[in-house]
Length: 262
Length: 362
Image (cartoon, rainbow over the protein chains, first blue to last red):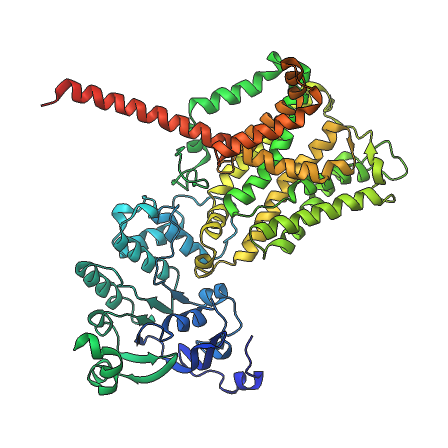
């Protein structure tokens, strides 16, 4: 799919980065949703991607997970060129994501949703045999449900859950198996202040080896759970830095924080 | 567990339980029907046993394979009748028939497994061809494969014996029983249909079936959970093809012959009608649809004559019945049944509530 010749893909074999994007662009017709994005994130690093609507943040996620293939550029995941990989191959290598608008199986129960997520990154996805009660994946699913505080509703159909609970389930699905890197797409959107505090607690208590990128409009959430920030505007990266640098940057304030934060 | 909920509601939220628990959970209705089917040879005439019930169960199995794909996978595949017809042809070609210059006269225990294997392979390949399409395009491409098969059998004389096909295909004699006899054939069909039904119910709640329902509801999310959606769908085609192939073997033993008309466009569409009329939400639907279809086909003529209409117009009655059911209940007869039960339950609850408030209202 990529216009970049193979030689360039081989040139920097293993860089030690969890995620590395080089010159990634994505066109929708004449519109460049992403243009020439180059980005690298270390293993275990936690980063926020900020920017106004239409800045290309979600398109960036879709390119990394393989929902869209980039029009040009190279994406490496732990040194491996995954640019041409279908989404499920990237997920099996330890990449996870959540969706801005909850993308769940509303006709299944909470525990079955999480169980499916655990199945997806294990072997025997095609098993015709029902698991026994002491199934390890079943246990994994139950402890994940517990980790996002949903044990009380684990046998309820997801369609019946409150909005905030669905958002928490969305996170549980992304934590299944052995994630190495997670993309969180506006996990706090629509949550109440208490639920936001819960979310911050879940994010900060993730094991240190799991890195993530978080798209978040709520600065109180975003800047508390990351160590670095990437600012995007019109499909381009225009600033990277520590949270405090970004907050005090005059250009950033003008472009992004300007109106709203007066 | 029957909720009159959306069309493709998942039968039960409890996805993991043992066979014993599943059996224990069945209502009285299930046991009455099961017992009735087992003792049927004592009650029913040979005509009812074979021409109505056995035939309905065979068609029900083919429609069940369609229901598995459509209900759990969201894949409307019209290839299932063709898979059954292919299996039927293979039994006649590898086994024995009146067309001695083509039939290879293999014993049935070689011919049948090979026929089922090849038909399954055919169904899987057809699935692989159409798996990347959705909705109406899946219908189109599977219908095209079905038509191609129909014309192949019609025009090829070296293997498929063209227009006349194969006659004189007899069910085997095995364990000292002539399986073509009325009662043995009824039980053979009942056994296969019950097995197919049980396997579909079981698999629908096994990881494979659960994941298939996931690909139906949200394929993109399934990929984001590490599932290969395309591979999963092809596997579903393969699973459905096994059921259709078994039904095809029974079909050729039932009809004692197979010809291009067996897999023609008419039967292909009939299968869709059976599945839709019965209901795509639960595995019992296709069997109910098949029974209604067989009853209509058998008795519509007499019924019309009796009312004073031209008996030859029985197709009209079938079409009209189909229209009425689909108009009034998009989820088929199963849907009507579930709604009636739900209404009954609600009215009883309302009565109970009334009695309570009547008794001790402040």
